[in-house]
Image (cartoon, rainbow, N blue to C red):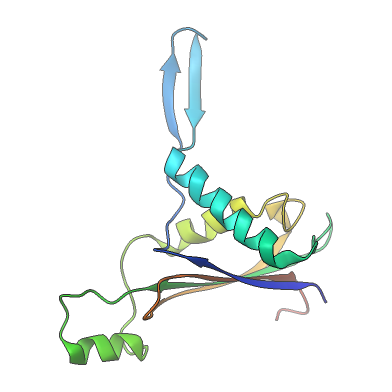
Length: 146
């Protein structure tokens, strides 16, 4: 079974909305993805390519995408609360929204890990506190709901 697990260091980011504006020179409305999102997607692609060793899931192959978004506990919290956060007793109920994290990862890996993100049949994603922030991502061939 084809499977690639890799990490993306740094604070997890979600997919930002495309900005739409009227371009008077072109005489039409134009949409563009914010530069910060494009840079983050390219970073995710780069991290995947460093670990993938040529793994690419062809069109027609269902895909499972697993994501763990790791956040640092706030510095302002007491030690006891930080320990609860790091032990998983308290979860990060904050921005970015989980669906936007999934979207930025799915779009970043489009055409790199798999032919198209329509192949994604299963997504398992969670937010957690950790001593090191970042994303843990696994892309694998979907097998029987697992």
